Length: 153
Image (cartoon, rainbow, N blue to C red):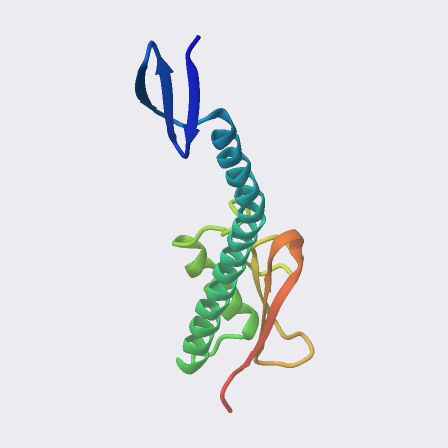
């Protein structure tokens, strides 16, 4: 009967008076590697999912900056438009080339005050004339940020 001798990843087999070396991993070593990889996957998965949510929230904030810049430019043109007209024109311009970062079918910009995931709302300040309020909504329609832009005096 052959006698097996284990040394690290090498297996020595003593058969018929000869010492034969066989290469390979033992089952125990392979199981340990699988367990370690499983633990690493459990640690990494939540971090990666959180990174995706943070990136989408960052995209909404970038959309808010684009809206704020466009609104400021419209106010600077000093055209005889009301804040509501400017808000409508800005939403129409920005919806042409942008998508909702959360992948929903909703447009990324809206003149409605309703909170929707991934949407930036651009509404006129009803109580303050010549003011536009920009709000960005993230995951589960949570408010991320609010910007208020007033026409130059």
